Image (cartoon, rainbow, N blue to C red; front, side, top):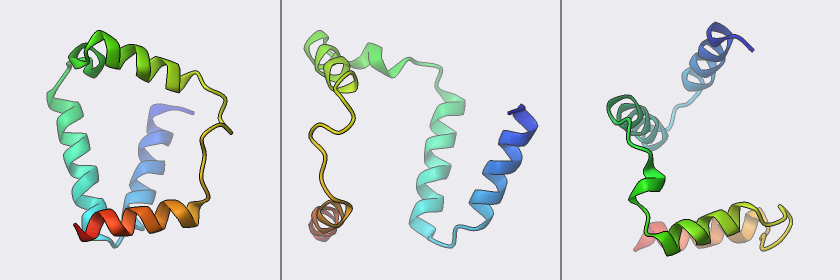
Length: 80
């Protein structure tokens, strides 16, 4: 996929979003990514980096939960 195609795909996806929180999050993530060239992994301690690497290399189906359970947990988290 070319860069122009990726840009157009993102534009189409963003244009279909009507949730202010999602748009704000996207804007903040994009702004941070464009302004900061820092590799975020360098900000982790050696222990945290090893843990993150281990988790990333685990089989995909390990330690998963149903979407409904995730949504319930997120709803409780948002209430706090």
